[in-house]
Image: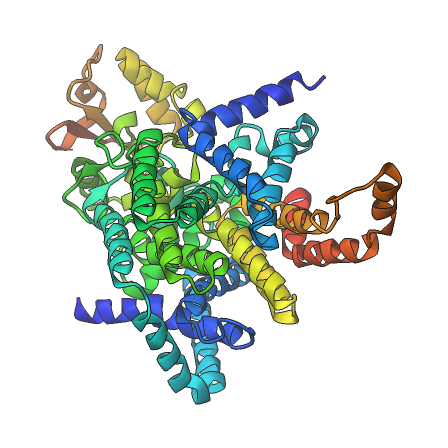
Length: 367
Length: 255
């Protein structure tokens, strides 16, 4: 039990942070933020899982091949991260400790309390969802037959329902299988108990980072924002179709992760990129987030790119100067003088970042 | 021309908004951003004002709906997840609190905001959504027990006809216990064995069992049948509080 706990802490906290620091190191701002690395680390892990699992499914590899490859890649990334960040480890720890020291205590405790309430419900209560008959059973079948999407998870038929392309290109249940393989715990327990407990702090870290982007050094406002996000989530049960319900009732399903992790991650990565002046590392992170979105569900092929393109479009439209227009001619001149080429290039760059979705979309259509 | 698409959009919004409380606060937040646009930073104006407006314009557009209809037919509401609903409301509340001059006013606005959210929303943690279960699988105890009992049997081939009350649980526990049919929401209730269960027609059930090569049948103890399954080669394998599991003793698995 203790060893399982230590493996869990290593696998779900330390490894993602180390993996994340491979990229975070190259950011202008937040390049020492453990929380930022923690969130980015999970995006990278989902992206890795997508890149290795989809070909392995087509090549009819065993699940253990996927598991050991995933562990191996993460191991290498952790080693690389330690090597490239070794000199800065002391700075990183001190910087985060300083940030923690200056964080408003009461609001922090309130936030942590509200998150713990949600974790407590995941740990001691259950929401049963019929969709799990497919998604969780896919994880179970993967582990128990040591195969990848070979058997229908419900009828046991060879190449059944789950051999449909839309499940293969968005194989999120495999992440539950991988956790199950690492911890040697039944996939249904991983999905319903362990995964929600792991991922909820990651999602709230993402919201914290979004709040920090908007409120900058105002830590009171940042944490107050997070308190209200908690309350909004807990009282978001007015519709089973809204993202709040998906977060607190079935976060182990890929579509819930799309709504509550990937889409907000797109916003965070784009807004950070905008602030940093869109360097190569920002575009790389966008690509990683798009691939992570593809991994969660087949809808992840379409929805994150649409969100990204509409967001960049909104920013380009905002460059039109409509204030203090003196006459029709003045307006006409402003429209003509607008730098359409630069805007088009900015939008095109973000479209190019969506190339993984374009590839998945083509596979979906042609298969 | 776009009647079906408009209906799809209306249905999606209706499913997504619930009773509309959160959406109302969201629109108030957008209005607040418009009114305060000169005081806010550009990135905030774009993300909290321009982006949601452009998004709503696109999603409510029947032409866009027509384009994506083949993929998002019955799940168009999922596109609404791109709206920064929770973030916008939280940002609006915090900004509004910060706009107040005195500490007392900030507290009042904060408390009123919490009351408004509670009134506009619905507490997710209710008995309809969550049950206290004593096992780590977070699945009904009896469903797990039934699955484990069949899974522990010596047979290398196990295929079961199960009632709707337990069918979603079995494949989540043991992949060696196969179902006679997939549990797809729309079509499942029309499969012969489930129709047979609802009418107590044992003949139809056994016909389905033979066709689908099922060697186990699970009955709820309250089910009524027009004959006794034990007269047709089935024996009681085991039982739990609410279920009896029958096994076809004459079954021979032929690949």
